[in-house]
Image 1 (cartoon, rainbow, N blue to C red):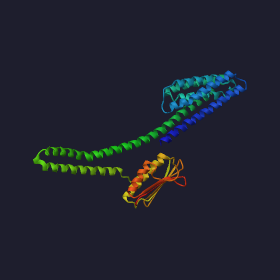
Image 2: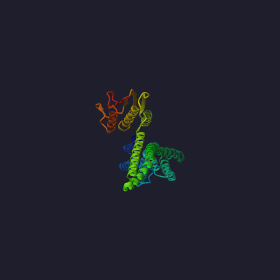
Image 3: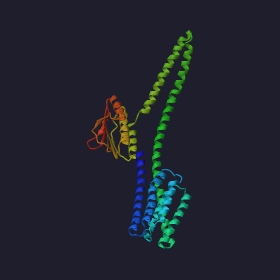
Image 4: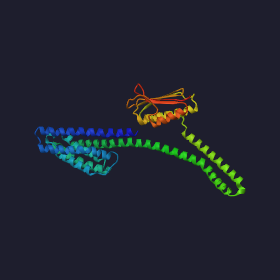
Length: 379
């Protein structure tokens, strides 16, 4: 899921980079056209192009700086604003009446970045200043009434600024959703650790306290020859309590490590679908022994872990028949020959666990270009 969140961020940022590059090329084309028609001089064209390139070139850095947080206004933001004003002042005269409004877009581009840095009241004030400046420039160049020019400029400024703000808000929503899932998983792990620690405390606290007291009493009695029989009885109680405490710990650990196959299948389906992979399950588990169910649950968990961590699967199928598990996914990244289960520590541990119970594991790319995990246990 972390990879998906980073991919979403890159898509959002790179898409905006492309839009800015397209705007820059369009405005540069206006400068080149005006120069080719002889309506502006070489210094005029160079100055206009430099201001335009500076503003559009700084925009990707401004966007990345303000995409994850709301930073304070920086020197880079001020510099980009000054370059935008310079570009507006150097609008080619030949564009008056047709492209002047387009040329003013460079100011609105800067404004859309500035709103990511400024609080709401400051963004409104800055927007009013930019709107007044662009409206006055366009109205003077085109000799149009300022009222319709102001309306067009206001709509453009608001749309670009709101679109940029929504663009960042969309990323924040994606990021918070991803962080929420990670926090939920971490909380579940922490709760399970607390439960296990609480169970161990309840199981061992009393027994170890009694063992400590009886050991101390036995040590005192051992110094008295007449109390040797009583000391022996106390030490026998200590041994009995220690054996009972060990058995209770083993029961607790076994309960902690035991998996339920049906619950594991449901959990794996939810995890894979949350990661964007469609999961199809066809499992006949009714006739399996408790031991076989636990072993297959471990195999399902290990297989799902490999899909999530080491593949880019969009589809995964899980089939269980007569103690045989088969998991297939289409996320093979590098074709290779099918291999045994010794390639990774997780699969190696799974193979050892199943081998101890008389089962076996194989894993590797299949002939159809899918990764296949097979596990067989005594039914």
